[in-house]
Length: 249
Image 1 (cartoon, helix red, strand yellow):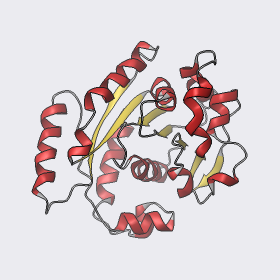
Image 2 (image 1 turned 60 degrees about the vertical axis):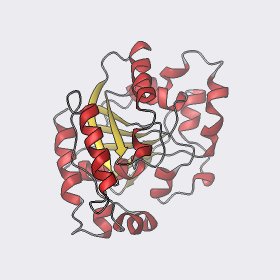
Image 3 (image 1 turned 90 degrees about the vertical axis):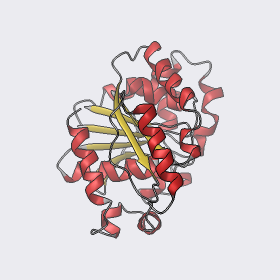
Image 4 (image 1 turned 30 degrees about the vertical axis):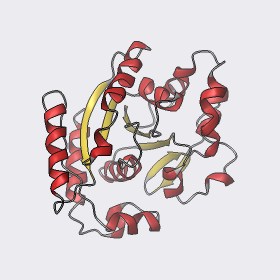
């Protein structure tokens, strides 16, 4: 089982969009896929068609009370572990727990024979939910917007990954960088892509650039992966190329 944390402490990097679409294309190829929402905004959960506030049990209860993961079965060919706003209080409430950073890792050990891929949609912060994801993950995949915001806090991002290593996940590996929200008409996007190449190119794999497309908004509103909204989108082959790389991890 490959457990991939999609992580960037900045918001708006397309973590949720990538989690949904990469997961879908992995499942399309016959892999057993589990998606985990670790963000209190519950954006990934909403994409499953479930209203977060209607849920009695979420990933929060797994992290807080060591309950089994509440799995929503076979939505778009994948299983999902949902979240809701309860996660916003997680840091304070986990502070007194024994080994608070290991809760998700322990829960996933029981699912290791059931799934080929677990994709974790991390929150846009460096709190305990992100720490749990990185300590549980076999790999970290970093989406970076091709804009100034995307490169802010990179040192803190890498420091958090190093924290996960120190906390006991010495086997975590990079699954690469995915440049996102690229607009070929904007020269500034080209400049920031070059900065991404300069910063990461020698140390991590840089996946195909994911461009900005209005189709993403339509798919988001319809609560479906992009391919179900527009099968001819030029982004679909890019997703499939990333998936092929993930299969080699």
